[in-house]
Image (cartoon, rainbow, N blue to C red):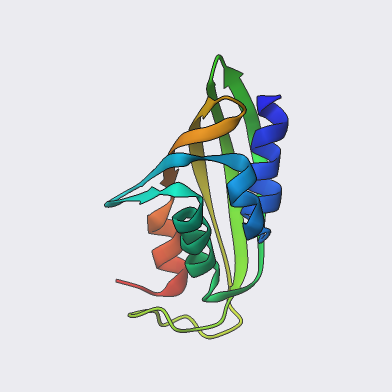
Length: 132
């Protein structure tokens, strides 16, 4: 069950079906990004929308997992998209393909995700965008 839940999380929600947030996470969901926490399904959907905004043709693929241990799920993924411009400090030309990897760790409660930790390769992301 958690394997399918994670597949829907990554391959459907993170690939743009933002309405699924209410089905996949609990009302008291907390997502832990470096430097900020995201609360509830609406804030999660808005965070994903904002993350996709500077890109066209966003695609997240599942590279490893998901690995399930009790109520915990872990996986490795790759994000790719065509940069459309608009990120402060970025010098990459519009149309540049950006791709980077990351890892997810999620806790499930009653068939939905209640907590999320993400680690992504920000260094590769920034380098490809020409930031810093």
